[in-house]
Length: 483
Image 1 (tube, rainbow, N blue to C red):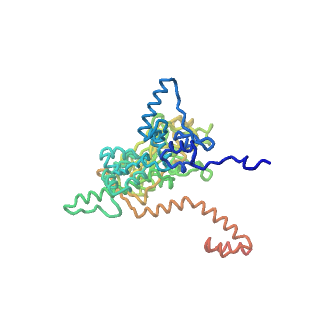
Image 2: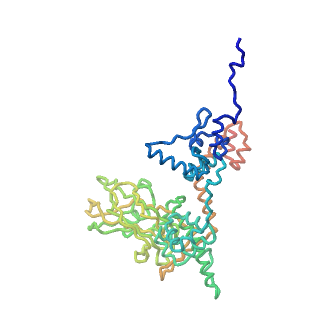
């Protein structure tokens, strides 16, 4: 029987033998035990096959290329600290890498302090100081969102001073709405013009700039706000002509329906043989300051005439402004003429379709109606009445869609010069914001209340809980519960 020792393979101690000695001579000054990743080993030029390391293969193309490559390898070994011809130094390959590769290898195997890229210096500088006042003004003038301008002013004290001193909020309002130029100055609260002591003109000027910044910042916010828009007409002032007064007066255009108590409801102009004679309808809004977005007009269809003709105009134009007289609500408005109004905005002509529907005429931009007067000009006539062969214009309903700026804003108009003073009441902003939030969520609360009322009417529920949620119960609801 063969002894068992004859089949045993002689095991060499680790670190001995020719291959181990060669590996020790060619071992780079790197912690290879930490380099467990094969990707790092291949990146360093060493291949790992069956637990053994071998020298990288060098591509050879001819004797000249082989000679040149050996010389270059010799020089590289001398630079890297190699002691003989066949020594391989991975540092020569690592130094030829880019910064990204050096960072990856250094972070993976460690010990590459000499090739690890140094972090860049943290350089901090003021944006406005680096660009200068002229370039900074050009950049900030490109902002078209009022929220961005408010964020810029909240960066630091120097940025806020720069924004206020250059009146960027007012300039933004002027780009959005040209009617802002009619405001000569801004007053905050109910106080009159503040008196400034002698020698403090700069302080008074800075306070004026701060008031303008606060007022125009909120005014520019109102241009983009959509909550609170609706009908703005408070009353009808006058019409240029009326056919049958009062049955066909301008007051009928405030009613949306075309029939009231089984009778037609509309305004009709007087008959004209010339189809080019215009007509005007003048209205007073509910606030002296309103942002107007669109105006809706519905022509009247004479359903009681043969063929049901529609008496519309060819085009329509709108004017907005204020009255030059001190006429108040409730006085006789028939004597008011177009010469007693000052128009701060005149819109382009919009074509009108000859259709019995509420037609929308959207303005090119939001318009501030300073003074609360809107005039609708009906340009051209289309329909002829067969009874007298004259041209008529009839309107069923008129809507002015916008957003009133009161009570946060008000205006005082100088009738002599035509200039106006914008009055800003910041304390009333909270009431308006809460009103807008309540208005947006009123329907949700209404639906919840209806559901809770239904649950409270059911038997077996704890009525004290619903009473605390919905308030005191009426007598009618209690009788219903008893039934």
